[in-house]
Length: 430
Image 1: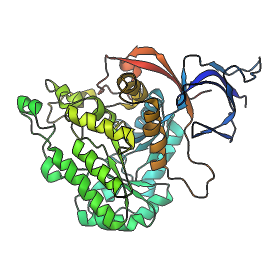
Image 2: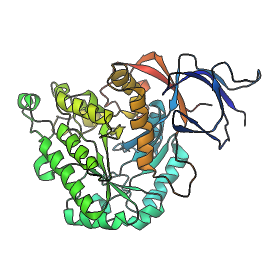
Image 3: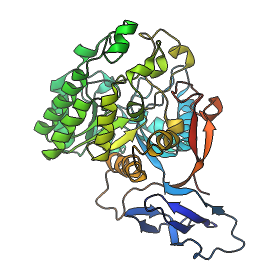
Image 4: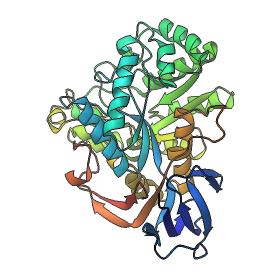
């Protein structure tokens, strides 16, 4: 197959311009700025790579950034009332639109990954329908009911390396502790959200001025922090690895920081919306900003950003949760939690975090490309090279207004609807 040439591209990590020759069928790997890049046959300083005059695939990348595509560690793709295959297709299109080449799909009512048949059916749908790679997190408990362990050996045989009950927290700590002891022996990681259901039942917002003004029951931050601490203590006793999902409080960041300092094998993620928005964005019962966990205070946003910068938090995720307009038009208490971010993931990160100087490109490559891939796809010791992402081109000078046509997910529950974002993505490079 004919090679693809990219000329005058600015490499994301060193700011220098290079020419690249991508081999469409090449297994060659090149290293640039410490990153192992797939399918690259040659790299040269800009203007120094000989490009055939008749080459049919040449990208003039002047002014554009070349970087690894993103991997999303936490995506929910089910849309109630829609077919499973449609959900898979739309999520794959949304991922490519947001610069994401692959994602870890969380279990849900419609995608309950607790048995081989469900996993096989899902993987078949992904192969046939999805433009992006989709890995699956297997269920911790059968039916995500929190009482009986799923069949971990069966799940592992189907390629599962992460266990999660999605947005649910296992109700039985005894079951969870025993599950950790068993699953740790076959190398599985537990992805858990910090929660104490007895404290968070029937709550939907951060306690504070907004909850008081709207008359809504607040979700205490201590519930998340107690839940994180409990999960880490259980894992330490059982010898299990834990990935803490959707950390949203400053206290949660501190708990994880102490666990890492003590040498515990723990990783953690933060959803993009917890970096950008606070409970004040809820305004007058705007259900777009109803999330799980709820949006917190500005001080929590800053603590989460600092946790990303110092390595306490390993990944930025979308926590993509598509909801129909009808569902989100219910009253705030009844409306489902969650928003969609996958469709505009990289553009939103660039607009709201990189351009204002809150994070660097190096931070984003580490937390959205390298770390999530390493956590979701542990390197096989028999392999010579790690799992790596394809490349994308990012045009920072382009901008667009987010409308329904820019949201392949097919739903509108995004905080960016009607706003301007910067960046245009070319993925895949062909």
